[in-house]
Image 1 (cartoon, rainbow, N blue to C red):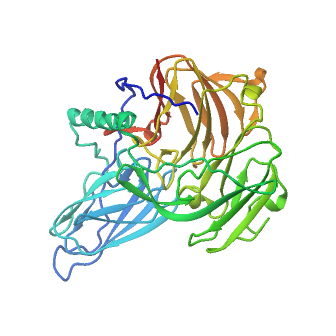
Image 2 (image 1 turned 90 degrees about the horizontal axis):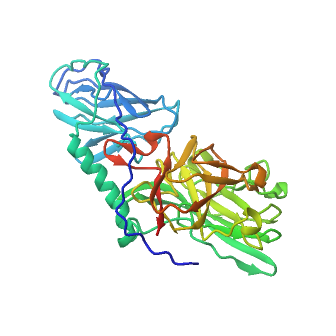
Image 3 (image 1 turned 60 degrees about the vertical axis):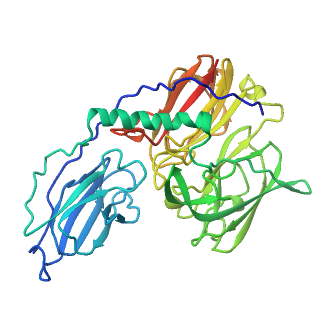
Length: 450
């Protein structure tokens, strides 16, 4: 693999700031009588959506237990939390259309931060303030906006800091030590390539210092990258070390029905502590494929149980796409329990793609989330050369700078990196990438060195 020098350019990425407004409202507080032993329990109804908490500034009587009845009216999973004495009490992840309850003990008079704890969502405006007051609460105006209280200077400073943190990786190394998609070499048993995968539950550092509950193959998100060739006989030995059942599905690959990995249709579930072998021959053309969980997949895939299978042409990519790329990169985009992320990381902890002037760059890109993500590259028109594992004929290839990727879709794109500079590469649903405090989530950079 060619070593590529890091660029010394100053990072200047210009994108529109997204100001997110949240609506305030009143609390449902039956029977609140203020402090004292006689205070009755208080119920507060909370609605979550993209990207606000409604009401954003509820009031409750101090000295009374509080029950939050939380509903998710949005399109993505959210949580609800309240910070009390430096500790955050929070719900589990709430899927769209579902509800949850959070109970907290009596509160002293004062203000308490409330927020969605999904990484990045608070930055977009999913924050608020609960007021615990003496006596009976007074309802606030339900239509009053709750904008960020940051000054213009504070906003600019926060935005600059996140970009500088990303740029610092070019000289100081990654902000987080662990990154997924590391190559997994097989062992050989006769003519069979054997890949060993272990599923575990773990804490994953999504951005520097911010850990989330995750599920991982071999301790990494995404799971190890597996490279095979057409005609290879392969075996995947899977051990389930999680606390819930699991099965493995090979997304897009052609195989016998009993290897398809669908619970109780093609196999029983792999229970905690058990293992399973999947064995088949690679019959598909060179391209990009995926392995991922197919048990409780909304949670398990969202939490990180996915990885890449690259079917590599025996005679090199030039035999398929007409050029031999100097740089090859794999990009998983996703949402859910890990927040908006690229390869299991949120900006500024995402890693750049680095090329030299004139290089061809091949990017394998897949959406393992539950939302559409239009991925936009600054500075270039790229060529879409493959879809869902199938190379497109030269007549069917097309140029783009924004590619809408539906959940489960896979593309191969070629970039002729002939425009030196640092070029943002991000989802163009702007509340997936930027808020008042700067960029986050689904942002990386293509660096083209002179």
